[in-house]
Amino acid sequence: MKQIVLSAFFLVLLGLTAFSQDVESPAPQGFDLLREDIEHGKIDTIVYASETVGTNRKALVYTPPGFSKNKHYPVLYLLHGIGGDEKEWFNHGVPHIIFDNLYAEGKLKPMIVVLPNGRAMKDDRATGNIMAPDKVQAFATFEQDLLNDLIPFVEKTYPVKKDREHRAIAGLSMGGGQSLNFGLGNLDKFAWVGGFSSAPNTKAPEELVPDPAKTKEQLKLLWMSCGDQDNLIRFSKRTSDYLVANQVPHIYQVIPDGHHDFKVWKDNLYHFAQLLFTPAGMPE
Image (cartoon, rainbow, N blue to C red; front, side, top):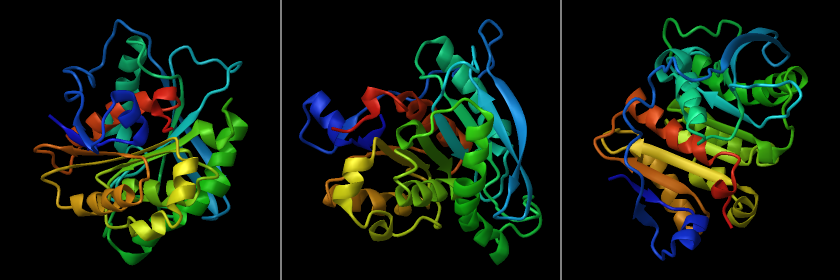
């Protein structure tokens, strides 16, 4: 079974005094397989003007089954890894299929999901030396592109709720580090944060959470996870250890026999998404 460090609200709900507890089994068989007998959401490609980069940039947007322009939705920004682009999650992690299946089972709050290209540079393709200094720097630059260009575009184009309590950010590997850096660094913009197998770009815990009391007050959900066979696990563990020491509510999930791959990340998304924008996800 998976082990997690449970946030304070789970400790209250379950009557626990420890910081670890068995949780659900892995996502059920077929959770990521296309079903023809249910309603499906829609995937669109958007193009937005980025003043940060000085060019037009692309992102994918998933709208849920039954989407209506007369409703207002919370938003999840879902970030890819160092070797990917805006299509990496779509092609390999199939969030649209995972979400469609969850909606069909009544397990998910309706939300819009934005899949951006987190490499904020004019040539943002995942080609050549993906570890080149300018390409690595572009992942940090994406913070300004996200906050100043992409989010305003999404909020002008789609019927979304614009407050921090209805905005989430999560990602895998390099995108996991971005999500922790940008989410915890901008709690006036994000209340829901998830880092899946977060990479070395993740800031040191003391930089991520310089004021534990304030972070505890503002966060709705902080989820971190990594496979126990992933050599990047030390970045998630050091952050969790710091949060535990400073009594900041969070979930830390270690996946047995888990590697640095989409098997882990799809399972993470399946469980993480079900907590988003719900009272169950809110620490007390």
